[in-house]
Structures are given as C-alpha cells and as structure tokens.
Image 1 (tube, rainbow, N blue to C red):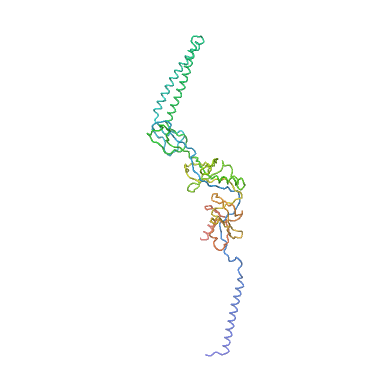
Image 2 (image 1 turned 90 degrees about the vertical axis):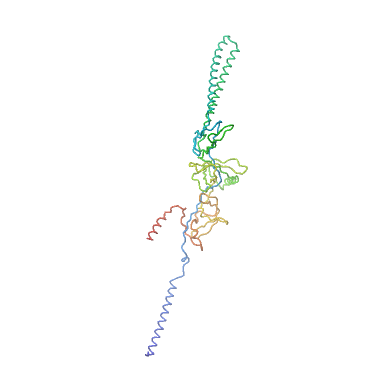
Length: 414
C-alpha cells in the first residue's frame, strides 16, 4: 500500500511542529521554576535554635565560705573515780547508757567507814560530856573567885579546861563529818548528766588504794564542741582584705553560723554556732583554734570524729553566684557558655572564688543580666549553633509548664 507524497509531507510537518511545541513548553516550565524559587534568604535554611537551660547573672553581697578541718569534743567530760579505798561490790548502770547527775554508779564496801563514823560519833559524845563538866566548873568558880574563896590560879585552870573541852568537841564534830563523807564516797555517783562508757573495773576489784582509781567516763555530747584549726597566715590575709575594703566582715562571731561536713562528705543537718577564736597561735603548727557548738540531739556526732567546718568569715560585694555545673574547669582555667541576645553562644573565661552550697562565687568575667548556660551543653556541639535560653531549675524542682506539655503530648499520641 502506497501513501501519497503530499500526505507524507504533511505528517512530517505536523510532527516537527509538535516537537517544537514540546520544547517550548519544557523551556517555559523550566523558566517558571527558576523564577518561582528565588535565592534562599540568609538563614532561611538554618536549623532552629536549640533550647538550653540558662540562668540570668545577678550581682549582690555574697558571704565567702571557708572550709576548715576540725575535731569533735564532748561539751563536758567527767572521770568517775574511786575516792575511798575498798572492794567494788556492785555496778549500778548499763554501759553506754544515759545517766543523770548524782545517779549511783558503783557501790564500794562501806562497812569500815561506817564503823569509823560510829567511833567518831562516840568520841564526839564524850567530848560534849567533858565540855558540860568543864563549863559547869568554870561557872561555879567565878563567884568563888570574886569572894576570894579560891585562888586566881584555880579559876584560870577551870577556864582553860572549859576551852579545851570546847576544842575537843570541835575535833569530834570534824571527825564525824569526815567519817560521813567517806561513807558517802563509798556510793560512787555520776558528777554530771551525759552518756557513760564502759566500766573500767568489775565487781570484786580493789580500788582507791593509794590513788583515785578511774571507774568510768561520762561525757555530755549534746551539745557537742567542734575544735577548728585555721592557719594564721590565712587569718592575717583575711584581716588585711577586710581592712583594705576588698571584703567586709561577716558580722559578730558570736552569731556566725557554721555548717558541719561529715567524713563521708554529707552535710550535718543542724547548724553550729561559733563560740570564740583563740588568741594564742600553736607554735608547732602555726594555727589558730576556733571552737563551735553544734546541737547533737540524736547522738550522730561522737567525740573525736574528724569533720570539716564551713563558716562565713567575710562577705564580698558585687559578687555573682552560678550553679557549679555551669562552670567548666580545666588546666587552662575556668570558663562558662554565655548566650547573647541574638542566640549566639560564646565561651567566656571567669575567675572563680570559693564555693557556697552548690554554687560557685564568680569574682570576674561576667556582667549582670547575661545568660549563662547550665544545662544542654551537648546540644551546642557542631558549627556554632544558635541557642534559645530557657529558665533552668535544679534537679528535682517542679517546673509548672512541664505537666500541661506532657498531657498535651499524651493527648496527641492518643
């Protein structure tokens, strides 16, 4: 079958026209896409700022805490000793218990002392009888002397006998009192209220033979004393800083609060009170001793324990406090992450002073009102990401928006 030449030419021309049209449409589409997608604006393709926990820096007067070593000591200590010689018959207390003042602790055989007391009472009775006779004779001789019935010497002898009888009575009374004291010493009692330790003797032991034998030890541990030592060089530097105006005194030492840190690093819950600072420097260690008093109602602190004492000896004006986790410490120095108003994050070197609770005292490097990153450091890795500071709360604090957000998320998932 043959197709006419005119028909064939028409088909070829139509195909060429359709190809030109398709090319024109494709070019128009490409041009349209190029015009619609204008060059991206600066930052339009950048990721959104990451949220980090931050705190706002504020300035104020901050007390400088000093941490010093110390030892606990019972506020009162009494050694229970045997004051008379004898055999211990009974122990009247339970070791390690609380005892009251004048509570009986031991019984020493008092039979010899009761016998001595009876003998002294008998001697006193005889002396009193002699006194009565001598007094009567002296009174009878007085009118006889006035009547010249007796000699002057006889009257003098009667008066002297009277006075000697009075002295014998005084001696007898003293002997009775001494015997009564010894009988009382046979019953050994506690001189103070406190906690008693172990018994140093047992029943049947001979005590007080030539010396006052120790029987037990009673200690009052509520309140407890803490003896703190501080190098005298630190004291002199502190006084010089206060005198120059760099620091100001923390106030009256009699009301200065002291916190006790136990050997395991935990903080003792009850505050102590600074009592005094010794005026004498220990020549062997060049240290000054300070004493604090701390309540110890539960007996947590025991005499002789090693502790550390945190006390506020001075205050710094225009100081700043930061949570300790906000400060990055290294061999090159201390630094923090600061969020600017545009969201940019920079590293700032700071000068750190002492610690106060869970915070560092910042001396230099920050200004009031700046935002310092505390949480979310891992989000700031990479090519200078931008940050959005949100208020930071310590671990365990309740944040109000957290509950509604959680509820909304649960509702969305359901």
